[in-house]
Image 1 (tube, helix red, strand yellow):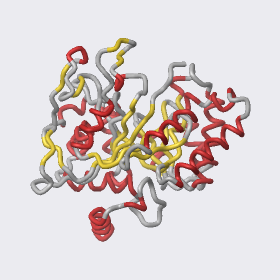
Image 2: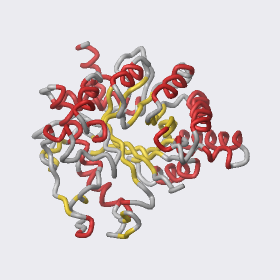
Image 3: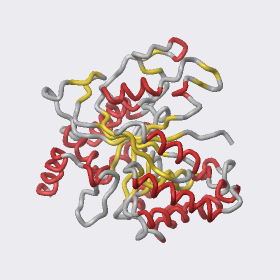
Image 4: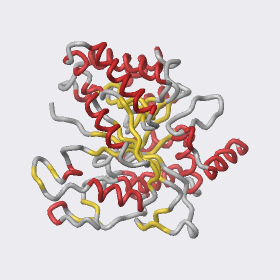
Length: 355
């Protein structure tokens, strides 16, 4: 099976993007955002496209562009035990980097291929504890169910070890970074059985139906992640519109899931960045057809535009707080509850007072 890459999530600080340009925050304030970024260790961010090397590795350039655009934190998410170890090692290289520990549904065969599934679980648990002690591991995942790619791992194995990873979330008291693809019924059944065993989570890159959306929203501790793949069709937009902003997170899932010209949501996009084809690579430009963290602004614009929300600053602030902690005090905390700055706390306090 082709090796999957590492996933990262990023949280934007209050700097604003205007047509791809970072504005001085004394002029314009934009609330923080949450996004997901997929850095493939042997893929596009290493300059390799469909097996062809087109340019030098540029992860550092992409990260610098993200920091310049106002990205404040990035969560590197591994899809296997080995990649979770690598994610922790990467997270230790920068104070702005964090990580998760878990096994992607298409990789769950590794539990049994290890020869000792229980030891494999214990290794994950030990790694999670190590990372928590270092202040770097902030969630369990990416885990869940993916029935679109059963050629990589059969459904029964996926279900068995998706459920097993709730033990990991319960033992560590960490939230979960979740994957649900063409498997809503089984996914929700497993979540229902384990809804009291995890503090909170996000079902990222959501592309399901209105019924799938409503079932996820029936779990009080669940958020829904939206990216370009969530905004392709008119039906997608209608489903997205029904997600309360208090239960939403936005993401890029780059280098994939960009908002394309053919997407129904494209008419709401206002921000643009200079771009060039990969064959004419220029580090000052984004690569055409390759999603990047800075493009999360476009997702925000589509959500605001289709929902008819005029105050994009308030929307972005709400989405940020969804990432850092649940909006309602009766719910558990999400990714960064212990480290909100004073400005974020003030905004959240104002939101509580408003509601």
